[in-house]
Length: 80
Image (cartoon, rainbow, N blue to C red):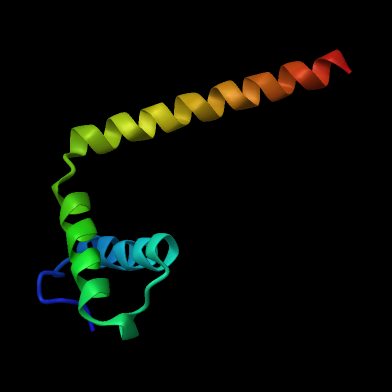
């Protein structure tokens, strides 16, 4: 059951994403107790504070990197 701060669908997504990050990076699970939940809450709060402008900048940066990678790939394929 999500924490009471989780109210919207976006909050639910961020909460689940935070749990996944803790599982992957810290190798912890819900059974690890308080440390797991404190890490989840900290990550969730940081993600929630991220402004729309910053999320947009990160998205644009990712799209530019993808475009460059695809362009390099196409260039490589043309040479063969």
